[in-house]
Image (cartoon, rainbow, N blue to C red; front, side):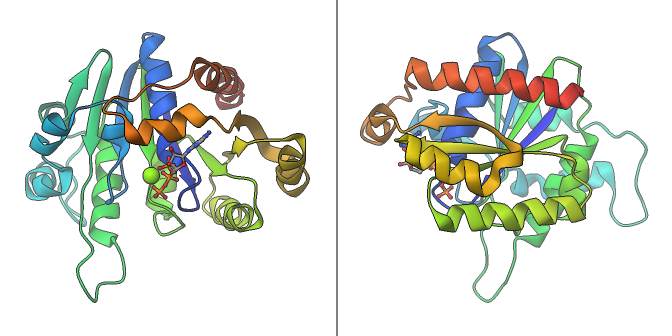
Length: 251
Ligand SMILES: Nc1ncnc2c1ncn2[C@@H]1O[C@H](COP(=O)(O)OP(=O)(O)OP(=O)(O)O)[C@@H](O)[C@H]1O
Ligand SMILES: [Mg+2]
């Protein structure tokens, strides 16, 4: 199953993506954690060290090698494998491969189109086992929401925090996702501190809220520590939500 995590900037996409990746890995699934945000942070949130992360080669650097296998434009090969390239260039730890897409927007350029195209190509050419889980931490906003990306994922979690702006972004993403034919779209309320905040999200986006994650001081504190350490309650809530999501994905 391939799951994309999107939402407005700063709402907690990377935190949620890392939490889900660690959770599924601990359950024995093989997890591909893909950092699709050019401003990459997922590796750090997964607990890889600065030394490990500094050595990692972003996938955009392998663009030519990947395109040589999967072809461009009308010249697509049938079922080309890119798994070995991804494995070789990912950081591994128990049940998990962390892959960084990379990409730098050049001055004057308006989008990450080449990177998005590469992500699409990689997603549609990775051959998965039933027990594989792909979790993609997307860049903030809506630029990545293209027909190709939507085709490549089974479901999308939209993270919102209590506040009008992230709720408005979520609405835009929901509409776009609908237009793109993505059926399984769920909201995850994050950083919720009170029933009032929960109510704000519930009343604005009620029909598809899959769950709520509490505001946790320990998560803020992680920014000051060399290791990622998620509070148990946070992972427990994610576990409950992921069960809902499993059901939704099957349904
Ligand atoms: N449940 C939570 N409780 C407390 N702090 C949180 C929670 N979730 C995320 N944060 C904090 O909010 C900040 C933003 O989180 P994160 O980097 O995951 O967001 P993001 O959506 O990936 O941001 P960006 O758009 O910059 O990629 C971080 O400082 C993180 O520690
Ligand atoms: Mg992020």
